[in-house]
Length: 261
Ligand code: PEP
Image 1 (cartoon, rainbow, N blue to C red):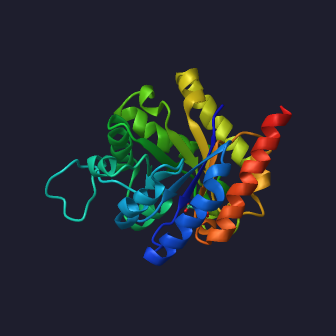
Image 2 (image 1 turned 60 degrees about the horizontal axis):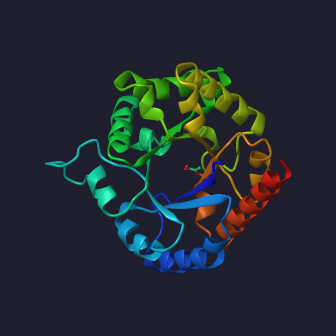
Image 3 (image 1 turned 90 degrees about the vertical axis):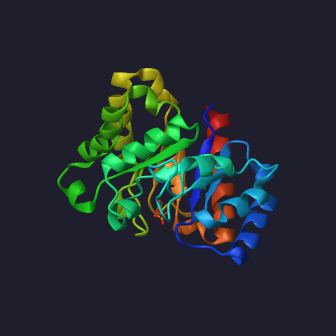
């Protein structure tokens, strides 16, 4: 059984005060409760090591929000995959729409990062998704497949094995307007079918995560159909008590769904 993965993407937020309160509370209130969910925290780079010290002897893992395409050398300001590995990171988010938009990242550089992460034994979380305009033009599936195909063109289907694809419609991120479950199901099943046409087992081994305005009040809708294997949570991960309630609620619903089937 795949455990449901909840990744808290803090983006450019947090400080020592927030971390000390937040991580201690998360450890105290939810670490022992998690049977059906796994939790991972994605803080800004500078806090990764500090948070990792808190997470020793817990089931909670560490996610980085980005990585450079180079391993080492004269690349001022960058962080390499070897460094992330060295400090205990498990997952790396790449292709987030905010990086595509504000840092000119494109499918080509993202595919290089994906391959680098996978080949160094960490797990890439590849964010894909369409803009509002592309959605209106019925291009969602085409855009998502293009974002995946670029990786396949630079490698082969095996590179996708046991990785994470996060479907994050760009218009749903931080907008308070999440996609509806029928839309999510349509896109994820389309992608899964496409990957299954290349290798059915690899399609099964991929984690399909949804991100885009997930919160305590709407999360039930995404869980019922058992299509998605996790959430990427931005804004709702920044208020500790609410985030703890969100994780507890997800754990409870998933345990009920599993015990029913
Ligand atoms: C995100 O940025 O990955 C995200 C899902 O943000 P939010 O939950 O705020 O929409």
